[in-house]
Image 1 (tube, one colour):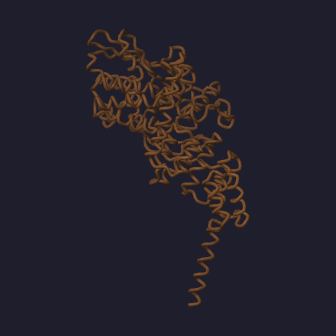
Image 2 (cartoon, one colour):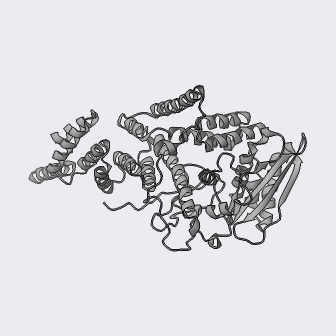
Image 3 (cartoon, rainbow, N blue to C red):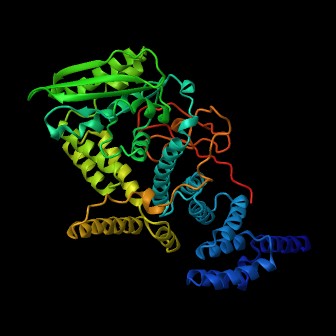
Length: 492
């Protein structure tokens, strides 16, 4: 009996030591002040609680959150990091540590922490919002990659670019039917999707190419002149580029021409020319894919050939709506993009890429919620419905600003993208890192990220080595294998 009492006392004392000040008056006062938005008083209370038990992790976490709310990120960061090191699965720690990293402009580490949050808080109402946050940051990082590539352009050694890398540029409409202009991006998107099914090729993602075109001032139409193509190939880290044109020859006839450019001078494969009825457009695209592979000297496996031969839609109107969606998406107008993708899915309910694009836009629409508003929703314990309503309100406000500008006779600005909403400043010196050795190949393929168009898939390389920690073959563009983000956390 005495031993039993001793055991109970030991368990009680152990629990007290672990919970520490979490149960004391100072901690409770700090929580109340934090809830009421009295952050300076909350910090004072948590500091007193920490004085009583310096090793108490919940106190350090809440003290870090208090400093975060006071915009004192440098004081908040080490406290939140220490709480993370003690428990890397605590959702509250992960949320605020990720926010602290993002506020500091450390995108890779913010993505790492947000990814951990989505895994740890699978049933939380904020999970989808954090997945969307991660998606938006991936696009933001791709933009930073493009800026970094331009800064490092003189250090690129094109001779070191792997021969298996390929980029597909947008096609130019040489015909008279301007209604077919959206195909300029759509055809390139289809080719990228199909060519990415070949394991021997490493295809540059379309969204990555678009971000670089934006930085080069070529983003509006996305069309690249002949003299600029080799330069674009070097910046993208692509040994070969596919470019081309299309035109309506008559009411029924259609022609596609595809050429090749080598980033490094060498033998250029002969161009492809495909001609046929417009109603056979999707079959012509498949012929073009196999023609490109033949010119490159690549024989696809039977499994790859079967995958490439799948035609996602034969409805030209649905495809044109999908192409319009791509253009709106590139401009950051996610609501309009979703409307076009939804229209494509309605015109052809079997059009899987359109359905996937709708889901992608749902995530990107959520990603426009500003970080401070996202924190408010988290603190309020918002549900998925409330988070979605907040995103809808943000989107409506952006649309209203556009309409006001139009009524005022001003030039209509494009809708703000997530990247512009969360950070409008140039990358810091910490973000833009120059190569360690002269002659090092620096391309977007080797940059901080290598993501597929599916926003929550791809892989992240290690920050120190600049090498991928995990890379799996892509079955199709925009449908890459899942990835883990593992970024070494900095020391305090």
